[in-house]
Amino acid sequence: MIIVLFALLLQTTAAAADPAISTAPLTLQEALVLAEEFSPDLKAAQARELQVENQISIGESYLYPSLHGQAGVGYAFLGGDNSLLGLEQLTVSPAGHVGPIGGFYSSLEVFNASTYRTIALAKRNVEFAKALLALTRYQVDLETARAYFEAARDLGGATAWREAGREMQKLLSEVQSLVRSGYQNPVDALLVKDEVSEAQIEQAADTARYRAALDKLGALIGKNGDLFSCAPASALAENSADVFSSGVSPYLQIGLSQVKVAKATVLQKSAKNYPVVSAAGGVDTGLSGAGYVSPNRDYSFGVGIGLPLFEGYRVVEQTKQAKNLLSQRRFDLSGADVQIGEQNADYDKAIDAARIELSGLSPEYADDQTAVAMARKRYRDFQGPLVDVREALRDLARVSVEQNDAAAELLFSLAGKSLLNGGTVRR
Image 1 (tube, rainbow, N blue to C red):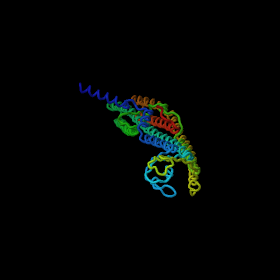
Image 2: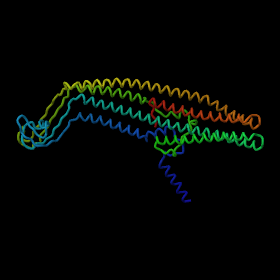
Image 3: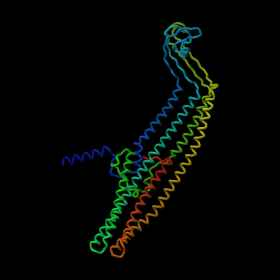
Image 4: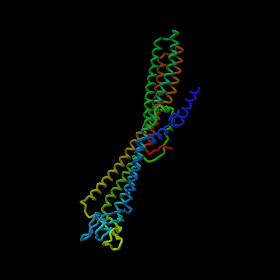
């Protein structure tokens, strides 16, 4: 008794530790949320977005002055000062002297159009990274929805064949009873037994496919396929695929952001033709007292303008290259719009076809149920052949399977169309 109680306690603790484990079938919304939380590809895209955002701060760092501390030994020569400190020494201590030297040197680009354009380009690259993140999320969600409805379809098929097998097993019992009584041909029992075996084979095959689909779905959501289940497609309402908030297609987001990046690149390249205003200053710490304007310190400050006059047409060609890329990106955006239109048309076709099929199969299923009941009664009353019962049961199973397949196709197409047009999972 103690061992049993201990086992029950362990099961309760395990269930509490992992609330995702449930006997209730997993919904599409739950599967998509789990997939987004688990996906390594999505996490990589999020990390890439953070890296690109860092580039903005790197660009903005050029808007602040730099400060360097330096030290060395100076030697006086005619025409200036030559030391280990190089050109910056001329700003720190323009007067020549002999002996140790040290100081601080600061510089600032007061105005550089290329810097501002580079920052603007970095911001556009962040928008592109966000678009890539949206595209990655779309791909993760679409693959998860496909795996989910594959599992629902296969489970629905297994359920349909299980129900068909039960009806055929009932018929087999009736036929065997009549055969033992000498009222029917023993061949009838063998024929119905074959029908039972066929239904069992189809059920086993669909069950195996269902387990494989659950394993695939489990790989996408980071769960063991044995720890969750799905509902049959035929048991799902059409609104079960309505789990998305509206948005902008990820393909359009990619195209628009690429155009913006290309525009910013054109401006950034052309800005290299503009003048650069710089300022620099320094202070000597007074390690040596020789040759200073003041007894202890030398201070200096200067402002300059730099203008690129000729660089072998490099900037010109880079700007042309950027403009050609902008033209390409605009055509890519038009192509993405065409692609979205084609995929929407394909989804609409699949949705309309599935709805028409379901509306036609529903009365056919009802007729088949009536046909099975009538054919079975006529067979028991020796008024009709066994073949009528077998055909009616076989057709009933076919219609049930087709209903399930059409429901799975309809639900996946609805979800796929929502995702294609920018739908995001509601939370």
